[in-house]
Length: 337
Image (tube, rainbow, N blue to C red):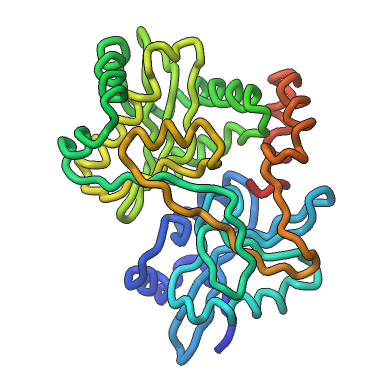
């Protein structure tokens, strides 16, 4: 057995992921997107045994004087984890420790691990099983169905065009400032569109009031599922239930394209967002992170909403919008979120 680095265009790896259940994070298309958006090094490491790839784990080395040096699978997203035979995970982790253990504090695997690693249940996710549009509609809470019918009379929902990225980015920045969290830069959205949407691996739906974009919903579209990544909105139009009709439009589209899962994305259990997502008829699923601690003894928490960062959240909310646009992406890159 030996550790290998999967290079772009590796035909053996392409065959490997065809045979194993995987997510968009394990594709070369995603690697191109995240490296271009963040300027990071997205590395696919694998274990080869008897001349066959057995397991692959994508990782991003994240270095920061403030937050430490970490190896994250996958940084800047909610989950990813390994693809392949779990029996080889221990060997893979051990090989990564040999390679990175002297300079990095720990390895974090978001969404999947084994009993040998330290488990942290920080988040949940809500996943809706998709069937026919009619069956999904019947499973939605009655009050939600009523809100959708109301919103459809007032708003238009359609796919967001690349020419609307500036508008979209402006909405996003205002949202992130309100949340007190550093955000992505405009290049991230441009690369999402160019590298994923244009290749059928992503989708952006928007809701419009009198032709004005007032909210948008981003999602990965790959394999068996749609996975919601980002939701942005103008709070002044909340009464028109833009979020409800936008989610329903995305769900309808997913049903029509044959996807079997609609993943509403990561959520904290104490968040009001959990209640919103459950009204669509989905189920709460675990979303643990697994750690191999190399130079530290306790699992770290670098979420901006962690109590330790409460002062930073308050400061972020009062910073000028133009300043948050400049420093948001560098800070997010160092946080690895």
